[in-house]
Amino acid sequence: MNNYSLKEITNSLNKDLVDNALLARSNLENKHILLTGEEICLVFPSVSLNLNLSNGCLFLTNYRLLFKDSKTSTDLIDIPVMMIELLSKKLDKIQLKIYCFDLRVVKIVFQKVTECNLLAEVLDKYLASDKVSKYFAFEHFDGQE
Image (cartoon, rainbow, N blue to C red; front, side, top):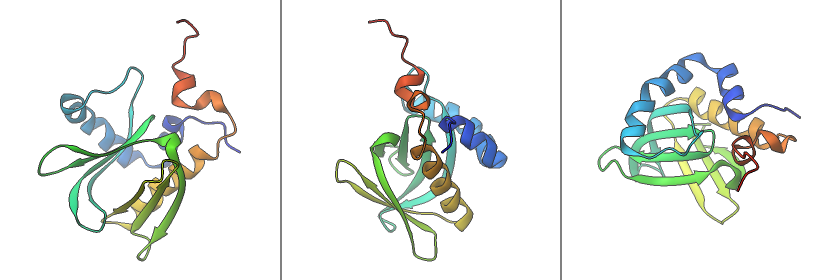
C-alpha cells in the first residue's frame, strides 16, 4: 500500500500535466470556489462527458473531480474523490467509467490513451491508500471546533 497524498502521487507521475494544473488554477479559482487547502492536481483540458454529450475540462483536485462544460462554464460533475468506488476502462482505453458509492456512473472520454491511463493510475493509487491521514478531510482537520 502507498502512504502518499493525492498531490504527492500526481507530482511524481507527469510533470507536463502538473504544469497544466498550475496554469489552469487561476482560471478555476475565478469561476469556482476552491475549499481551504484544496489544490488542483491534474487538468485534462479537452475531454467528453458521457460519450460526447458535453465537452469541457476535467480537473482533479486533492478533494474532488470537477468537470466544467466548455460552452456554459458550469460544473456538470462534482464528485468527492472518496465517493469513487470503482474505475473501469473501455473503448480502447480512452474511456474511463467511474462508479460512485452514491450510485452515480460517469463516463469520461479522453483525447489520448495516456491521459486516461494517468487519471486511472492516480485514482487507483490514492484510493488504495491505507493511511487515512492522507485523505483531504484529515489533512486539513485541525482538531478544533
